[in-house]
Length: 109
Image (cartoon, rainbow, N blue to C red):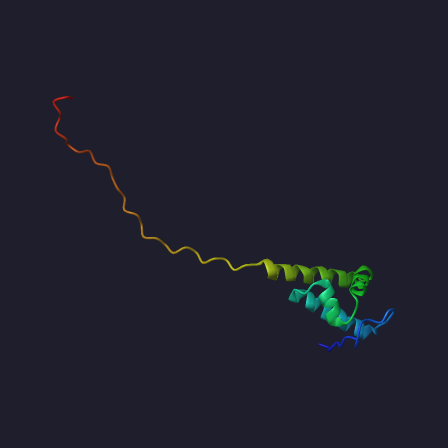
């Protein structure tokens, strides 16, 4: 992957990127989203204002689809928990049967 270095300080308004640089920044942005960074954090990591990535999203259908996929993967990783282990099998409970007892009859009845 191409190393993308952000600008020295702040962002330059109206800055344009070469096609290869823009592609590398988009890929780095998507990777940051999958890692769980927010949109503004991911944009700052690649050295562009957050408005720029939203502009890319609006204008570039494949990037929009990749963005949605990256967000879904990040959410899945964040909200997926391992299943608890199955309960241990318990020994069978003893079966209690009711027996008729031969009781002596009472004088009362």
